[in-house]
Image 1: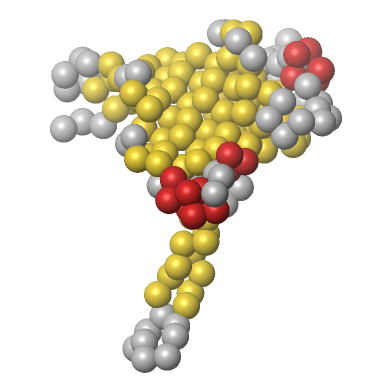
Image 2: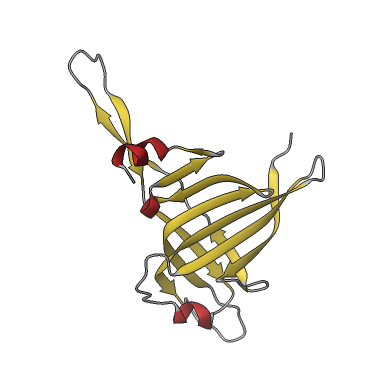
Length: 168
């Protein structure tokens, strides 16, 4: 079985399409914070899940985008909504998978890059995230909402029991 290959993509910022402007994206890493614990009677330590690590996304464009500069310094943690859609094709079957990553956050770093006459630039943005959702062919696979204490994976809310124990 051949791997899925990204054949094309679209990037949106608060529903504004960046078709023809977006060049690359470094999608958020999903990382769990695991800490070692060894109690009495244990022959070795085990790693205990202490929650998720902060998420970020990096996106690169062919030149400066006014809308992104206007979002710099937003006071709200989830003030910018970004959506990345990839058309991944399996060359063995020819079938496409639509994979979307929907995030909310705010820009942490805007790097306008080097400007040279007659050459496209590299306008790079790093955004700190407060929300993440992965949708595969229309089905939600993962939804992470740290502020509302939600971690949904394949339809199972893994923090529902914790919220119930806390009465929230």
